[in-house]
Length: 335
Ligand code: PBG
Image (cartoon, rainbow, N blue to C red):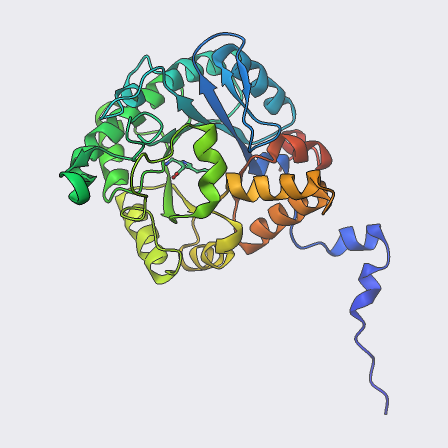
C-alpha cells in the first residue's frame, strides 16, 4: 500500500499560491508612527542615529502627520522636546506644553488621524528620569507616589488638547489607575489608555534618547523598568494594568520579547501593542547603509514576526517607509 506524501512545498511554488495560504498579514492601519515635536518654526532637525527621522516643529509635524494619514497608517504617537527642563518636568503636564500644542494643530489639520500621546516625564526633567526624585546622593531614586499626580495631569492635558489615546510609558506602579481616575473625574471617560505594561530596561532605547534628548543624567532606569530576564513578572504587570483600567497593553521592545507578546495575547486575549523601538530600527538602517542586508525586507520580516507573535498594533519608525509597500489600509472595505 502506498500513502500520499505530504509535500509542503506545493503551496510555495508561486507568489499567488503563497499569498493564498499566508497566515499573517500586515496592514498600514496596524502601524503607528512616532513623531518628535519641538518648539520653533520650520524646524526639521535630523536625528543622527535614526536616518529618515527628525525633530519637527509643530508646523512641520502637521505636514508629516498629513503625509502619514494619506498612507492609511493607523496613527501617530507624539513625544515632546520642551523649551526648558526642570526637576519635576513641568512642561510635560502644562496645557501649553509642546505636545498639547502639536495635538491641537494636528487635530485641526488632519481630523481623521488617530493621535496617541506618550505620557512620561523623562523628556521634561533636567535629570532625565521618568518621575520626580527623592533622597540624596547614592540613595537618590524616583518617588513613585509623588510622580502619579503629575502623570495624571499630563494625560488629562493631552486628552483635552485632542489626543485620542494616552499611553503612559513611565513604569510607575499605579499610574494607570491614577490616570483613569483623573480622566473620569474630568468627564473624559471615553479616552482609552494604552499602557506600556511590560516595558523592559533595554539597551535598544539608545537612539530614542538622542531623538528625545531624554537620557538619564545619572544612574539608569533599572529601578522602574523591567529586568529583561523576567517573563512571569510581565504577566503580573499586564494583569495589574488591566485591573486598573488599561484598554490595551504594550510590550516593549518588540523583537527581543516576542515570547512575551505571545504569552500576553494568549493569556489575556486583550488588544496588544508592541513597540518596535529605536534600536531595532537603527540596527537595520545601519546594516542596510553598509549594504550588509536588504533593509526593506528586514523591516517587513521584523514587522510580520511581531504580528505573528500576537501584536494587533505595532508602533514603528518604519511605518512611513513600509506602508506604501502594503495593501490599501483604511481604504479597505469592511462588512
Ligand atoms: C519614555 C519612552 C522611551 C521610549 C518610549 N517612551 C525611552 C526610555 O524609556 O528610555 C523608547 C522608545 C524607543 O526606543 O524607540 N519613557
